[in-house]
Image (spheres, rainbow, N blue to C red):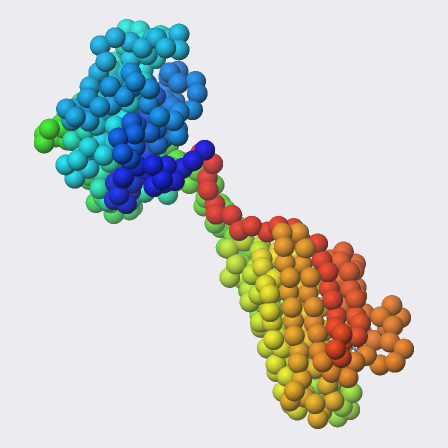
Length: 499
Ligand SMILES: Nc1ncnc2c1ncn2[C@@H]1O[C@H](COP(=O)(O)OP(=O)(O)OP(=O)(O)O)[C@@H](O)[C@H]1O
Ligand SMILES: [Mg+2]
């Protein structure tokens, strides 16, 4: 389905600010659909008098829909066109006197002009399925009255609220709980869900007739200073959201001040119990923090081990023994790098490009002082899970080390080329470590190599990571080692609570 942006840009004359306004409207119009028990269609005039184009539509969650089919992207028929023209030209909410029976059910249609900066930029068509209409209850009457106020605000250009920050967590819905405040901030209606939410906050008295800001202040956990913005929201004075924390429950409030024809008529307060949601978020947060702390400590411990080995290496006389300990220091170091990175990662996934940079730098540093070759990394490793990152860091260390140690005769080091090439798609990662050095010794056979370095590499790549390893002469001279792995697709998903 085409987006509002696409449609507006390709077929209407709406400017950027108009489209922005319509976005703000559409991000909040579930509220209007729910309060109206009606479907909403957003129509905008098509360029060159081409009639009206449906940019967006919304069905009510509080009642049956009047529109079985999607209408976005279609052009209004003659009946609708007449209604939309009237609403625009007369700049007022226009209701068709007879219901429309086109689809076999009686549907009442109304046009609500959408005004921005004194101009009508679009018209909302509101379609109410009259089949479900019955003698309205108190709840329904309150909803409908709220809907009327809101539609008049849309027509007057005072809704959506300019500059109201988009809500990160979804706004409470009408069905979550609704309060209607009168002009003085007293509750004139409370839906059953809103009542229960306040019960859970510890309210024993009735909400009706009470001044919401005063009652809410009394329910807040007493050890915390009173939140000014909460008071403003609970009084219905500002179009904002705030949370009440009391009696072990957390309730989210969202205020929609109603100002019709320049007069405050009160406010709607949407109420939602978010206790469970907040508890789960807190749990996840502490779990994440614990895991990160553990990685941090593991890294510290590994660095201590490396330091001990380095101390011991210094006391040794035999060069071979010193070299062996130095390598151990390096191996431990590359694991520490991964844990260090994980200790900053929001989840058990790391950006391996960072790790590769650091491993390459370490390999350069620890290798013999006459070596000047600095590994060059091209391509991207992307995100990898901790289970892959740790062994891969070690593998990379060993391969780089080999190239630096065996690849280049001392004289050639200045022109030495040492390259790491990473190629990643969703499921595969191929890492090539290539040098233009002396090449492998005669009779080299990876399968029968018994030296420690390549044994480590083989074990990690084949057994631990389930991948493939190939070491061969590089076309054009030197050696190239290729590691080929299947990796899962690691996407860093933002925590988006599903309700
Ligand atoms: N890039 C390379 N260029 C030339 N020869 C290499 C290269 N990589 C490996 N080799 C050869 O393969 C042998 C085995 O390497 P391996 O890493 O297993 O052991 P090592 O480097 O000698 O010792 P260590 O256990 O300290 O790593 C090396 O001794 C070297 O002869
Ligand atoms: Mg080696």
